[in-house]
Amino acid sequence: MRLNRMGRVWMAPACLAATICIGGYAQAQTDGCNGAEADLKTLNGELNRNALADAKSLLARLQTAHPDCAALLLANARILTVEGPPSAAGQAFSQYADRMPDEATGMAYFARFLIDQGQYAQADEFSQEAYMRAPESPAALAVRGQILVLKGQTAQGRELLEKSCALQPDDAEAEFQLGAVLDRAKRPAEAVTRFAKVVELDPNFASAWDYLALNLEPLGKEDQADAAYRHGLDVNHEGPHYDAFLDYNYGRFLAKRNQLDEAKKHLDRAVTLVPDYRATWYDRAKLNFRMGNYAQARTDGERALSITENTGGILNLQVYVLLEQVYRRLGEKELADKYAKLTRETPPPARKDYGDAPQP
Image (cartoon, rainbow, N blue to C red):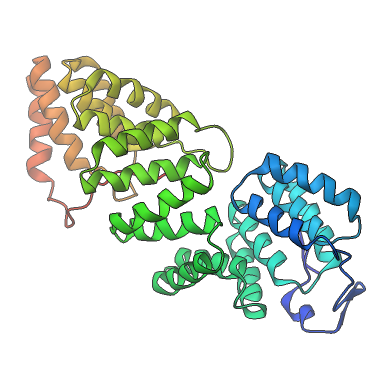
């Protein structure tokens, strides 16, 4: 039996190979879903699109008509991964595992839940078991692909995600994960197609709107990117698809379009939403410098320098250059000379992609 802080869930893979496992788990159980097949398909589609209100309404009707249908336990668990505390979701998955201990789709959605909880080793184990048991299951393909990408096996992960999306084209999360792979590969045209599909399926998926805008930018589709950013901000509420970097990315975008006052509003929010990220302070410092707010630019620049950068984003050299300019404008020659000296003594970066926008 596998035990963790969320309570009893699936047994270990070694136990799954047995006909009867310790604790009385049977290899197969009567499902009790006869006659509900069409509604279950609809319910699954609503969950894939994150249409939780419709899913909950249908689930309630099905629970009355088919109280012994194990698939409804899984549907409830999937809803609780979004709306309930982790303990409630874990208990719901445990109830489904009691009824359907060998069922791969349940393992796959449990693995996806574990990823959200940061329990990557367990997610890896369950995703692998789900995929081995049902290599044609869209849910198993999607979560195994996601795990492989996280492990650096990008080509294999992308292949599984593509297969999942082809088999189950209404899964917003799988489409999002595939889009993220394409984004990291700097294939914006393909990424745009995937993220556009995500927001078509789930218009409230704020992170997908952010990624869509970020990938429209290099394609020169600035007006479409602007609209995507605004859509994302309109639906950016607390929840699994909340995006703390949306204001930052939009602020940078507006600054590039010389909409400085609007850009400042969003960068002001960004430094409160992600205060430990160097790029937010650095980009607001640059904006304040452009607007003639030199004292504020100095404060932001020094704050940026105080934050250790370990993400491959804004380098010390960039901050030194900016602070030299700021202190020259402020007439503080000694400090300006200090940062000029640091600029000369700091070697240039080995890579040229250090200025990329952060990802949501």
